[in-house]
Amino acid sequence: MTRTADPDPPDSGLDLERVRATFEESTDFTIGLEEEFAILSPDTLDLEHRFGQLWDAAQSDDVLAPAVRGELIDTEIEIRSGRGETFSEAAGRQRERREALFSLADSQGLALAAMGTHPWANYLDQRIIDTPHYRLLQHDLGWVAQRNNTWSLHVHVGIRGADRAIAVCDWLRELLPALLAVSANSPFLDHRDSGLHTVRSEIFTRTFPRCGVHEPFRTWSRYADLVDLLTATETVVEATQLWWSVRPHHAFGTVEVRICDAQTRGDESLALAELIAACVAQAAMEYDEHGYDGTGSPLGGNQIEENLWRAIRYGMDGEMLDFRERELVPTVRVLERLIDWTAPARERLGLSGDLPELNGAQRARRALAEGASIEQIYRDAVAETARTYAPGRVASGQ
Image 1: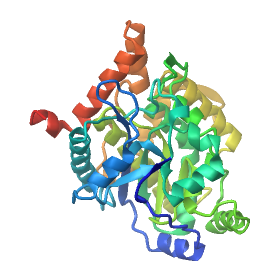
Image 2 (image 1 turned 45 degrees about the horizontal axis):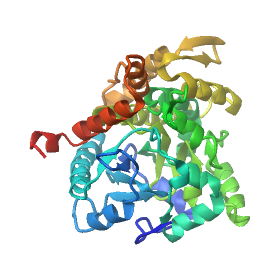
Image 3 (image 1 turned 90 degrees about the horizontal axis):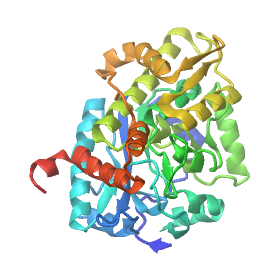
C-alpha cells in the first residue's frame, strides 16, 4: 500500500431516515461530473504510483483542493465538478479543474490518460491507497480490489423525492446497455486485443459485489429494507459499498450513473454526460406524467444482462434485443431511439444530442487493423487526452 492523508474521509451514509430527508429536499436536475484518469510516466506510459504526491500538491491549489479525489488504487486520480445548478455550470467548472489538474500533473513530471483500462499494466503491481476507507475495501474485497485497475465516468443528477429517485433508478436499468455501448473505450488488456469493446466492464462490473444491475425496488421502503439488512449484518458499513451501475447516492440526493468507460476525448466525455443527464431527467419526467407503471413494467435482470453482454462484446458495432417487440435492433438504432426519447428533457435542460460517429473502442480497433501497434494507439490516445481535456495548455504552448 501507499500511504497518504485521507483524501476522501469515510461517511457511512447509512442513516436511511436522514438519507430519505436528503432526497425529499433535493433539487431536480442539478449535475455533478466525476472523471477518472490513469497516472503515467510520459516516457514509458507505464502506470506511476503517484496519487499521494498529486493529492498533496493539489491541496495548495484553490481550484483543485475541493475537486481531487482518490479511487482505490494509487495510479488513479479523479476530478469532480461539484454540484452545478445546470449542466453548463458543472461542465464549465469541470473544464477549469481539468486544466488545473493537467498542469499540476505536468509540473510533477507525469501524464494522464483517459481510457477504461491500461493496455499492458500488470494488476499484480497495483497498490491500494493507504487510508482507513481503502484498507477496509482491500480487507473486504481481497483479489477483487487488487484486480481493479480501471477508469470510468460517473454522472450525478439531482432528483427530488426518495420514491421518485428509486423509480428513476429502476427505469434507468434498461438504458444501461446502450450507455455502456456508446461509451465503450477499453478493448486492450495484457498487451492484447481482448476481443471485447469494454473489457473494463468484465473487470469491475462482473467482479465487484453489489455491482452491475440491481433488481427493481419500486419504492424507497423496499430499497431501505435491503440496505437495513445489509447494515444490520455488517455486510456493508458504508453506502459507497453499494456499487450498482445506477444507484441513489445517499450523500448528494442524486441518481448516479456509473456504467461508462472513461472517455479519451474531453468533448466526448461531456457529450456522453449530457446524454446520461437527459436520460435521468426524461425518466423522472415520464414518472411524473405516467406513474411507475405508466409505460410498462421494467425489464428483468436476465433481459438486461443479455444486452449488457452485447454492449461489452460488440459495443456500437453490435445489436441489442428489443424484448418488448421481440426483435434484434442495431445498437446504433437503439441509441438513435434514446436520443429521440430524451428530446423533451434535452430541450428543458438545454442539452445537446450530439454523439460521435465512432467511439473510442471503434477508433482503436480501426487503428489496429491499419497496422498500428497497441503501444502506439495508447500513446496517441494519451496525447489526444491532453489536447482535448486541457486545450488551454496546448494553446499557451505548455
